[in-house]
Length: 181
Length: 107
Image 1 (cartoon, rainbow over the protein chains, first blue to last red):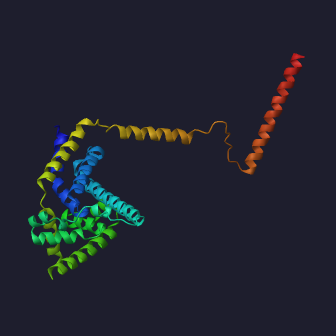
Image 2 (image 1 turned 30 degrees about the vertical axis):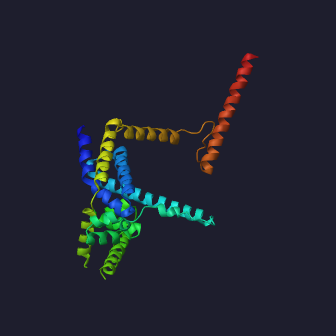
Image 3 (image 1 turned 90 degrees about the vertical axis):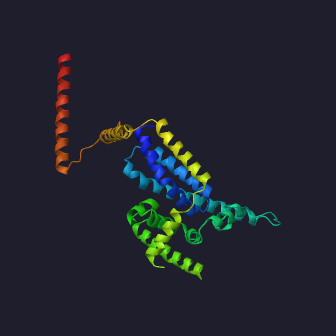
């Protein structure tokens, strides 16, 4: 492994778990999250490995957010397709194909046992946020990006970042208060 | 829950989210595969400046070069135009005079 490869390896090792956690919260499926991170790593290496290492982090998270958005769009398309398909079926006893979309973490009892209950509540609330709010909140609060960097990563204006972030906070607070009751 | 506590709780929840062993192993494999690609791919660091220089040269040629077969007329005022026409007429008359001289010499 040469020096450039070692540097890239260290960078990816540093971000891979956090990237997977963010993607998992965003798409709510561990395997899809893994695919997203894998694709993000390859894209970074193929397109931007020659850029200065200081640029890798913002580029990596921008690619990650794009892949998360692509994953949501694919699911929406599949959902619409299956809805259309079902609309044409009269006597359909088979399960709804849309139900094969990944189950929420809360539906996986084995995993729930492992999770600390308060962490589980927060993760569940995060998962319930709309995609943009989720992306903005994760980058700002978890990744610690500033407004400008978040705007670049998500591909929206800085004003939009502030709006999504404040809405995400309000919704999270409401969801957690409801869960505490 | 105040804002700071909420953010802290969310940050902890995401960061402390357990990564299953299988996912951790596959993440390491994905990283190794990505890093390996750096060795496989030739570096094209020189390509960008070279392509840019070539593009500038092509654009310069296209902009400077006049399309074949087209005569570009100078933008002249009426006075300049009439002066130019007079000069052309004089040149034509000189040419005719020269031709007549040639004919006379030949005859």
